[in-house]
Image (cartoon, rainbow, N blue to C red):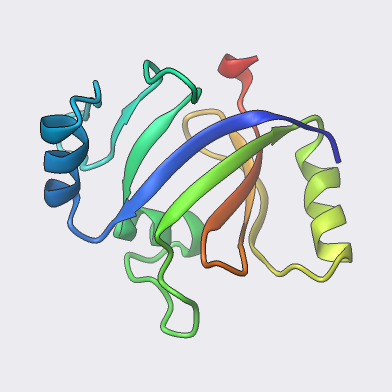
Amino acid sequence: MNVLFVASVAPIARDPEASRRLYVDALGLPLERQDGDDYAHSEQVDGVRHFGVWPLGQAAQACFGTDAWPDDLPVPQASIEFDVDDVDAAAGELQAKGYRLLHGPRTEPWGQTVARLQSPEGLIVGVSHTPWMR
Protein backbone atom coordinates (compact mmCIF):
# COMPACT_ATOMS: atom_id res chain seq x y z
CA MET A 1 0.00 0.00 0.00
CA ASN A 2 1.31 3.42 -0.92
CA VAL A 3 -0.03 6.25 1.26
CA LEU A 4 0.30 9.50 -0.68
CA PHE A 5 -0.92 12.02 1.92
CA VAL A 6 -3.37 12.66 4.74
CA ALA A 7 -6.51 13.70 2.90
CA SER A 8 -8.73 14.57 5.85
CA VAL A 9 -8.87 14.96 9.61
CA ALA A 10 -12.22 15.42 11.33
CA PRO A 11 -13.21 15.37 14.98
CA ILE A 12 -16.50 13.50 15.33
CA ALA A 13 -19.03 15.66 17.13
CA ARG A 14 -21.83 14.42 19.34
CA ASP A 15 -22.84 18.09 19.66
CA PRO A 16 -21.95 19.84 16.36
CA GLU A 17 -22.91 23.29 17.66
CA ALA A 18 -20.59 23.03 20.69
CA SER A 19 -17.80 21.86 18.38
CA ARG A 20 -18.48 24.76 15.99
CA ARG A 21 -18.09 27.20 18.88
CA LEU A 22 -14.64 25.76 19.64
CA TYR A 23 -13.27 25.36 16.13
CA VAL A 24 -14.85 28.43 14.51
CA ASP A 25 -15.56 30.94 17.29
CA ALA A 26 -12.63 30.21 19.65
CA LEU A 27 -9.92 28.95 17.27
CA GLY A 28 -11.05 31.00 14.29
CA LEU A 29 -10.88 28.19 11.71
CA PRO A 30 -12.57 29.11 8.41
CA LEU A 31 -15.11 26.27 8.52
CA GLU A 32 -18.22 26.52 6.38
CA ARG A 33 -21.51 24.60 6.30
CA GLN A 34 -24.05 24.10 3.56
CA ASP A 35 -27.65 25.08 4.34
CA GLY A 36 -29.29 22.40 6.47
CA ASP A 37 -26.07 20.43 7.01
CA ASP A 38 -24.17 20.30 10.31
CA TYR A 39 -20.91 19.19 8.62
CA ALA A 40 -18.52 22.14 8.95
CA HIS A 41 -15.37 21.93 6.86
CA SER A 42 -12.56 23.73 5.10
CA GLU A 43 -9.78 23.02 2.66
CA GLN A 44 -8.09 26.27 3.77
CA VAL A 45 -6.48 25.11 7.07
CA ASP A 46 -2.71 25.00 6.56
CA GLY A 47 -1.10 21.64 7.20
CA VAL A 48 -4.10 19.48 6.24
CA ARG A 49 -5.85 19.15 2.91
CA HIS A 50 -9.32 18.94 4.49
CA PHE A 51 -10.44 19.62 8.07
CA GLY A 52 -14.00 19.00 9.15
CA VAL A 53 -16.23 18.55 12.15
CA TRP A 54 -18.23 15.41 11.34
CA PRO A 55 -21.49 14.91 13.24
CA LEU A 56 -21.68 11.42 14.76
CA GLY A 57 -24.99 10.71 13.00
CA GLN A 58 -23.40 11.48 9.63
CA ALA A 59 -20.42 9.24 10.43
CA ALA A 60 -22.82 6.42 11.33
CA GLN A 61 -24.78 7.05 8.12
CA ALA A 62 -21.56 6.98 6.03
CA CYS A 63 -20.35 3.75 7.61
CA PHE A 64 -23.56 1.82 8.28
CA GLY A 65 -26.46 3.57 6.55
CA THR A 66 -28.11 4.42 9.88
CA ASP A 67 -28.17 7.55 12.04
CA ALA A 68 -27.08 5.67 15.19
CA TRP A 69 -23.59 4.36 15.87
CA PRO A 70 -23.74 0.60 16.66
CA ASP A 71 -23.70 -0.25 20.35
CA ASP A 72 -21.10 -3.02 19.84
CA LEU A 73 -18.41 -0.60 18.55
CA PRO A 74 -16.60 2.18 20.41
CA VAL A 75 -18.02 5.61 19.61
CA PRO A 76 -15.32 7.28 17.49
CA GLN A 77 -13.76 10.56 18.51
CA ALA A 78 -12.23 11.44 15.14
CA SER A 79 -11.69 10.37 11.56
CA ILE A 80 -8.52 10.39 9.49
CA GLU A 81 -8.29 9.49 5.82
CA PHE A 82 -5.18 8.49 3.93
CA ASP A 83 -5.15 8.87 0.15
CA VAL A 84 -3.66 5.81 -1.54
CA ASP A 85 -2.84 4.71 -5.09
CA ASP A 86 -5.48 1.94 -5.15
CA VAL A 87 -8.37 1.85 -2.64
CA ASP A 88 -9.44 -1.69 -3.58
CA ALA A 89 -5.92 -3.06 -3.11
CA ALA A 90 -5.40 -1.11 0.14
CA ALA A 91 -8.70 -2.39 1.57
CA GLY A 92 -7.73 -5.93 0.58
CA GLU A 93 -4.33 -5.58 2.28
CA LEU A 94 -5.96 -4.35 5.47
CA GLN A 95 -8.44 -7.23 5.48
CA ALA A 96 -5.64 -9.73 4.77
CA LYS A 97 -3.87 -8.39 7.87
CA GLY A 98 -6.96 -9.08 9.97
CA TYR A 99 -8.63 -5.67 10.05
CA ARG A 100 -12.44 -5.63 9.81
CA LEU A 101 -13.70 -2.96 7.45
CA LEU A 102 -16.68 -0.88 8.52
CA HIS A 103 -17.45 -0.85 4.79
CA GLY A 104 -15.60 -1.81 1.65
CA PRO A 105 -14.51 0.51 -1.14
CA ARG A 106 -17.27 2.69 -2.53
CA THR A 107 -17.62 6.04 -4.22
CA GLU A 108 -19.35 8.65 -2.09
CA PRO A 109 -21.81 11.17 -3.59
CA TRP A 110 -19.08 13.87 -3.55
CA GLY A 111 -16.78 11.75 -5.75
CA GLN A 112 -14.31 10.34 -3.22
CA THR A 113 -13.71 6.58 -3.20
CA VAL A 114 -13.15 5.29 0.34
CA ALA A 115 -13.10 2.19 2.53
CA ARG A 116 -13.20 2.61 6.31
CA LEU A 117 -12.19 0.66 9.40
CA GLN A 118 -11.99 1.47 13.10
CA SER A 119 -8.52 1.71 14.62
CA PRO A 120 -7.53 0.15 17.96
CA GLU A 121 -7.87 3.67 19.43
CA GLY A 122 -11.43 3.94 18.12
CA LEU A 123 -10.72 6.35 15.23
CA ILE A 124 -12.45 5.93 11.90
CA VAL A 125 -9.60 5.34 9.44
CA GLY A 126 -10.23 5.68 5.73
CA VAL A 127 -8.13 4.66 2.77
CA SER A 128 -9.29 6.84 -0.07
CA HIS A 129 -8.86 8.31 -3.50
CA THR A 130 -9.80 12.00 -3.52
CA PRO A 131 -9.50 13.18 -7.14
CA TRP A 132 -9.70 16.95 -6.52
CA MET A 133 -6.77 16.78 -4.06
CA ARG A 134 -4.37 15.28 -6.58
